[in-house]
Length: 349
Image (cartoon, rainbow, N blue to C red):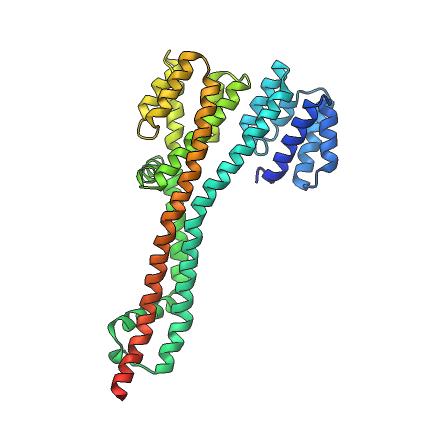
């Protein structure tokens, strides 16, 4: 969601504008035609405002600036560059390709990040069901006293009773811990830096994160430079569009390097812990040959494929780990229930 407008609606808007303008239709006619087919109420108010401003003679880019939560900075900057160069139709076509690629990349990345969370929720749900529903009824049916319980059965029984008697406190404790963790890792500089460092240095997740943010950075930078956006402004847009602090610092280092008369490569070399040597080499080639946009696109395409491979690696690692965890939980609970039955069988025998 972007300011209440779904991404699907925005992609449809970009695509419709790109096709219609490329075919030679006037901008006002394109906007009016899209408004007639739009079925999103939140987007309707945005479109009405844009059409009113463009109809009164204001530039399209100025009309977009009223809705920073709807239209991303990279789109607004390309529209402004297109108005200046007279190539808005071409730039919009390229932006649609860029936005579609980024949407697919983000979906793949979010899928990889969501997978362990979903599996963890399933594990918690299964544990709650077994310990709070099945296990208590089973123990009650056997009418066992604590002194007669095997050790594992006693431990599971104590855990079950503790959770049943304190579930409200446990629930709010998890909420408080989650809120505290989010605040420390997202709202404090030291906490965010420490969390990023942990993630980037983790065995498989770190590799995925680095490749994902390299891909996003170079694709965004390439699209802006190709659209005629000045280098420093393009870097600022990259900085605004990338949420990760490590890569934000990398972009700031590049900007400071350029301001001081240096190059992209000088800023990249300060961040070799997150930027692979091959990326630095490609930036160097792009600067020396004057073909930065082409080189950036090649880097982006390569790392798109690498992200797909890294996602598969993450899922391939998590699946057996979750199977082991779930197997351990189920085995523990099974033993806690079956051992008393074996003891009873021995006593009967």
